[in-house]
Length: 88
Image 1 (spheres, rainbow, N blue to C red):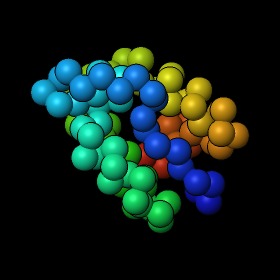
Image 2 (image 1 turned 90 degrees about the vertical axis):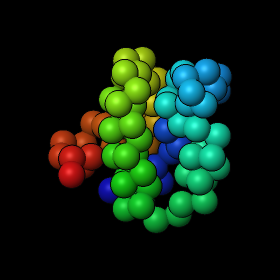
Image 3 (image 1 turned 30 degrees about the vertical axis):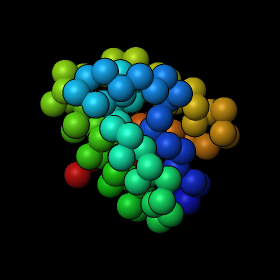
Image 4 (image 1 turned 45 degrees about the horizontal axis):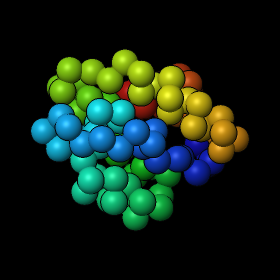
């Protein structure tokens, strides 16, 4: 994937779940860290870890749809829609 991968943040930004956002599952530190990652491969690894983190926290059922919408708005292919891309 050569397109720039957008932040997994979906602009909800309410940190209520033990410091994790109720919209995407990121902590404030993770949100800052993602912005500094430039290489697509490292961004994908970050997203993989986030998805595992979301699962451990009990899931974020609205996040995939919201992130797809954000990717579409930025005119990039959502990594969730590329078969096998996020599998480890």
